[in-house]
Image (cartoon, rainbow over all chains, first blue to last red; front, side, top):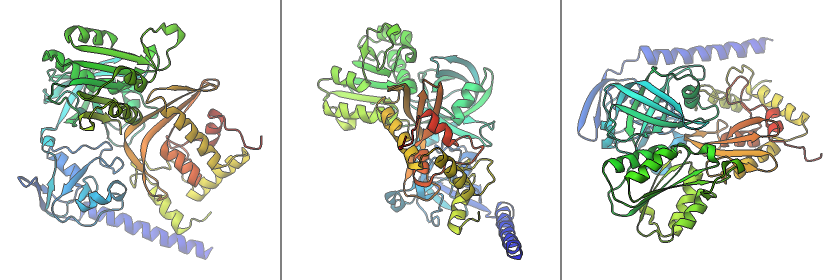
Length: 365
Length: 156
């Protein structure tokens, strides 16, 4: 009994001291003003002591992060040009040996205790936070929802067709803190005051459960963006688009942009779904076929039901690609969807001669 | 049961905010050994091993991958979809590597029931017999897995 009491007392004291140190670090420790030098150009003075990610956010510089800064997504990497101390155990799972040599750090875990110099992609300076209201919610299929957001402050966004934003989920039943999830913009860049997202329900997903079960028209939400390198490259090559499910969103944005710019490039869009109930925006694709003379939409069903009376393409999207593409030398390919679909499609495309450096994709990974 | 220093470290890693935002234990106040032992006993009562359960989960994941992100029929009466969310998760037991946030959703059309699990679930069940803490939204009840995936003991 005495031994147990002893162990309990020691554990209690250790826990108390640990909590005390955390409180002291958060309240008493004063790191004063520190400077963050960005890309050897811009320099900002900030209050030290907080993680780099949240400090930059307060300065309206947004580093992509899907978990809101808890070290569980590994997305918020930045290159540190100055000395920044040892890696924390919470960073190590995300940092490869090569990244260590480059001094890449997880900005959400790196606390600002002294002056620091970092390098971030220039395009992140275009990233802003936007207050929006939900202007409409519409079911596109049984598990894909169209969400339209009207921008309030600032009321305009500039982005390239194919890029994505991060949607902030407030605290609710499934999360005690704000979390962020990335969604591609489905509307064209010309629509600066209102953006559209196409979101597929993920079982138990924190963000999609919120959007499908809690979000209402008129609600105010926060997004930040735009992000991403998935956009149409200038070229005269034929374009092949490949997508499935909510991978439709960035491709639709690119096609609407092409239609507005009256692009004449030959383009074929292969869209994979399981059965008729998984297809959506067929009317919109028909409209695009009419406004883009060299555009063709090819939906394919992998398991059509007898009642679908489907007369179009059948089979997995890779089988359809294999049937339709003979020589890929002059093709640029743009893919959006699950890693499995993208990996399998890339194998087919390269086997047809599509150069690897002309294959662009946005993997949900 | 008393935790070894090693298990204590692992349990600390399972707390919210250490390696994942929500941790792995939810509102479960039992120590890790008790959680593991209770689930182990439940699995033994069903005449199974954790590895057999993980193998069946892996089987459905591999079948589902053929659907390239869409549901695909798997005989005799299952539908499976494998899709991914952005991000990765490390194993709280300290095993090397990180696991893609890949969700496998299995619908048992005969029972009208559905189960979703990640690659990390398969690993934690197969290698550690860990199904996560009670009350945690991502915990998988061993009996639910066995019923939905129709796992039959090898000696039956």
